[in-house]
Image 1 (cartoon, helix red, strand yellow):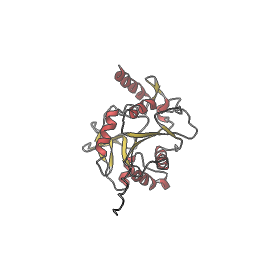
Image 2: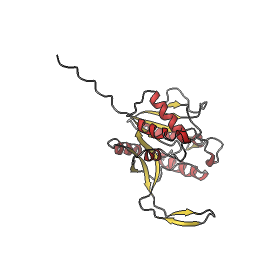
Image 3: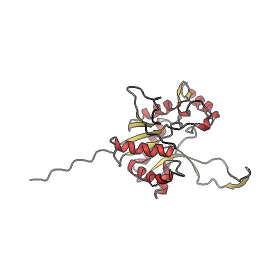
Image 4: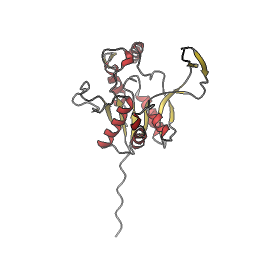
Length: 240
């Protein structure tokens, strides 16, 4: 009697994780900046709309602070994970654990994206997925540095000009295997994730070399008050 055929391995899926628990203190707004209206709706809604158009994303999770019901609606195209932390890194780490506790496999991919990068496009997300799916590590959207880079001394004056050759500005999404990224973050939990400002840094510290995938200058993180007008102008031009 022939031995039974082994069951096929479940297909690897892509999930999205949006840390959305920040206070937005640098933005100078009354609301947390991710909820500040831009082009007629809260900033994070534009971000979610872009991910909703990427069919290869199995599920989008938004990590919010416990008790934050701002985004809770029925029949939403995303899920809420009310496990946000004090820092972005803590929110991402908690979100990764939440993903694993809710059916995601360690071998699945996760695209971590800043809620305040509301100008990301479905085409940019798809380009990252295309580049990372066959890669052994994963990677991130980034932009080659085009401006001259200066280093400031303690007195606020230039004390060095830094060679920009080979230097890139990191963006998001950043795409890695859930299990590997969770383990990379866990290695820094005891230090409250000191120095871990994005996923690539955690993966680099774990000995990996993330892939750089060219992004767009429009995929900037809305951070300062003047960024809101620029983001709104770009969104309005896309809808014209």
